[in-house]
Image (cartoon, rainbow, N blue to C red; front, side, top):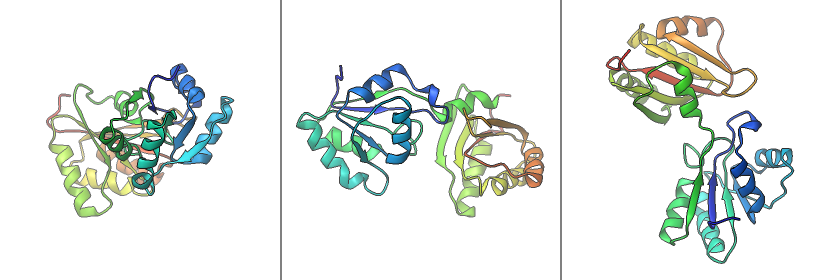
Length: 228
């Protein structure tokens, strides 16, 4: 039984088997599934034998589509909101829709699910008692440099998403700022080629210079004032 008009559902970040039973029950019970990419979500649903109408909801149409979803929910339809991987709203579409639902007093719930941030944090071996998640690192070197300096000076672990096309330069920049700072690059989490690259920034910079890593990346930085 679906108790809320709208359910935000966390999906696997790589391994399809990481989905929860509750998530599957909700996906099977709603009238429509809002998803970032209908092709990606369609393949996951097909894997579990679920057939539902799909409605695209991504960064380019979320503002325009949110009122439609809220109005349909008020009229009695039940929606599940998902993204390609992980939790909706965390560096993915979902936040603007939630603001619309709040404004119209449409009840919603959030189903917990896999998170690349927490998975990478635990696997990094860096302190987990306190951490900062900064989303995607800035593209421009000046802004990125300031963000990295702040992470180095922190008393907690800092976590960022970074493009595989920029990770080598980013790690090199960290090594230039502090060669000994402990960092981790978590790659392809929960997938077949999952890898954790752990060590001082200078060591990882040298290794990546020889063999640049590929795939989806999470960068973790141990602050110089963090407990070791």
